[in-house]
Length: 264
Image 1: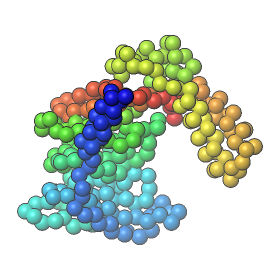
Image 2 (image 1 turned 120 degrees about the horizontal axis):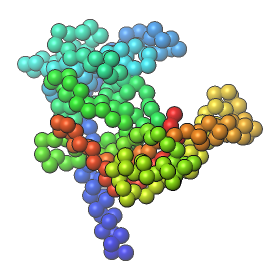
Image 3 (image 1 turned 90 degrees about the horizontal axis):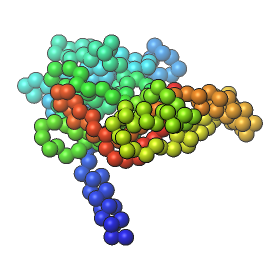
Image 4 (image 1 turned 30 degrees about the horizontal axis):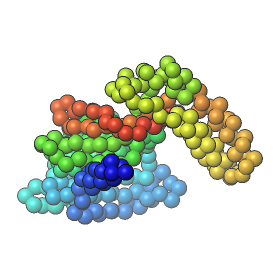
């Protein structure tokens, strides 16, 4: 009982010690009118202000922002929030990354992808002064920032990776490959059956809702089709990691619950 209490206290301390993104000074949105995409969407410019720079997101209402940029604050002059590109605006190369603003930590700017992939959300980290991409990965859930031990930023999150095998149907051959890939040789295999069943359930339900037939008859029909489709799909694994942003960044797997589900 005492050991359990100690573990609980340690867990609570760890949670309270984790940090989130920096608080923005303020945000401004400029309405640009109707989106070219239609469907009642609005085009807009979102500007997020921080002490040393502004993050600009020109969103025309289509998938992914039209332009993501970082605008330095020079000599205390606050940049204007406008669609027009300023002379000192650092534009993120759209061929390198496309998506939406996620958050800021110190001098680093985080962007999400324009859509999720395999149950995770890809993200990228750019330096606010140079516009250089420092790191990219895919995560399930939130990023947590651990207290700084040095100048390097340390993050903790559930990392999402695809595999080339099916841990649900062939765990004997697949799981050893996965353990080697993620660097956790003693990790216990997650409940892939649960993950695959949940994925098929959600897929069937979503299809019935799209058809306007959210009833038991439709669900039973679509569930069988969803199971046939998902049960033979290669696996996706989510596992906890600590990432230290350096040159290069280091990804260290840590103890914790692993999860498993079929790829998209």
